[in-house]
Image 1 (cartoon, rainbow, N blue to C red):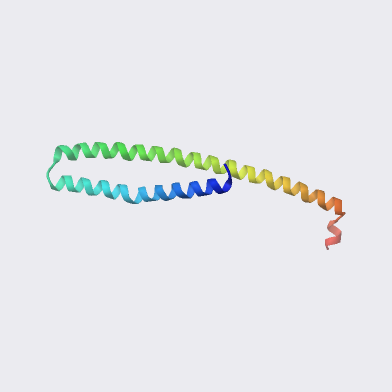
Image 2 (cartoon, rainbow, N blue to C red):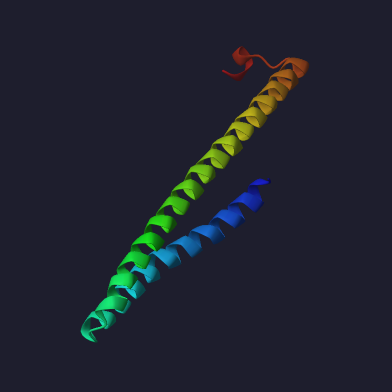
Length: 106
């Protein structure tokens, strides 16, 4: 996966997670308040169970999403480090070819 593609996909996914984090809890709370005030106790009880299962499921899914994003980011940083080592090796080779010495730079 390229860096730009990873960055674009992650930004989009984070935007959706943030949207869900802002809207879903308030929506669930509004539904529960609505059910409570209208006296629909049996539906209210089911809604509590369904809400708890949904929140738990989303929390677990988000956790695994975050873990795999961190893993992918670590792999990406590792490949960047490898490329920096290659560039460093090439720079050292160029310095040797040009016979640039640290004493000449002083």
